[in-house]
Length: 144
Ligand SMILES: [Zn+2]
Ligand SMILES: [Zn+2]
Image (tube, rainbow, N blue to C red):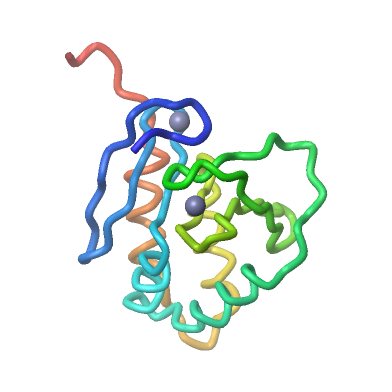
């Protein structure tokens, strides 16, 4: 699958039976429909379904950011903003193929969801550190 932003080939990352596609060049992440729900649910961030339904139903956000195309069907995706400071702009295929996060946004989303569940201390921490390690690790140079 090609990255909707920079068109590099993405690599498949598997984590707790959830597969996601990661672009090494721009550090964006693509989740097929359902994979993000799975990931969130298995890490105590369980209202994922409601949350994702909310995104799907939400109005498109006005944004100067360029529209991305769904890597599966090639149609322009809908942008939805969630959270505040920082606001996270998620791109979602209108045909529910999946969701795209620009570099770093997926970790912001996890933090946002974890914050909302302070009563369950520690919810999401494991997945947040995973995201940070995998998606925000400094670029490795000179090793090929
Ligand atoms: Zn890319
Ligand atoms: Zn699509």
